[in-house]
Image 1 (cartoon, rainbow, N blue to C red):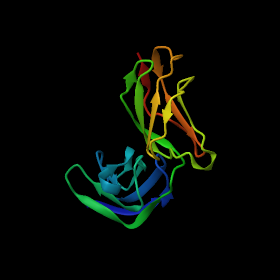
Image 2: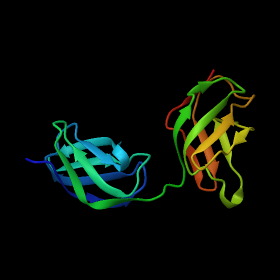
Image 3: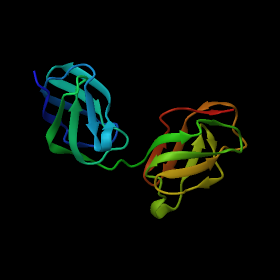
Length: 171
């Protein structure tokens, strides 16, 4: 059976949303590709005619592409509309550090907007030195009060609060 995308539902969403794609020729290992070769994740091939996938963190409105392990490809005839998420974190550099060290937090929605207020937390420890570099980068210094261990980093702005997808290790 040739690979073909029929429909997808919903036809709009934000990163991390689960969408259902119907069609034919779906096999384990089928890739679901969004904007600029960004793979969807948590792909579950339920049957040869149905799969589910989560929208990747970085995606833009456009057609959805499928590719089977044998290289066969198919594209949707309509676009998936990506709705702007309020705020999210995609990466931390480095992923561990000592008290007083500055780290870079990458993501989206880091602008301070009209409130001009924002916070960065290393677990329960609030950073006191924060550089709001841009809408996609924040630099924060691990606070002197932080104790060694694994913590999640949270960034809060007028858009809401985002939690790092992976823990950060305070050494």
